[in-house]
Image 1 (cartoon, helix red, strand yellow):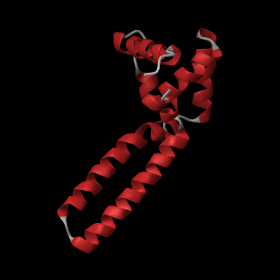
Image 2 (cartoon, one colour):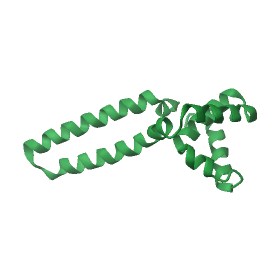
Image 3 (cartoon, helix red, strand yellow):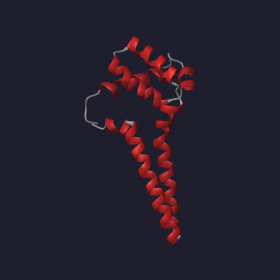
Length: 126
């Protein structure tokens, strides 16, 4: 039900809303000089960075050739629809350098992949 929240169009739209909030708070701060508008700006910037980080990881942390290499490896191990979901999760979770440096036999990595597969195959509402 909430799958749209991982979509790029939603994240970009959210960033536009953040920019509007920041502009509004900055305008109000210039008019009133109240410190709560500075707090709003700082909190909005922090939340915007937190939201934008997976988007940044996905587009700037992986080259197209690296993405295709991971997807082809994943397709050998899983079906195509599950692999599409897993690849998006992996791309947004880490940079390529971090991902290749991970120990693929570690319990932390296996737990991450297990949780990602469960999220991808889960049909529940939440």
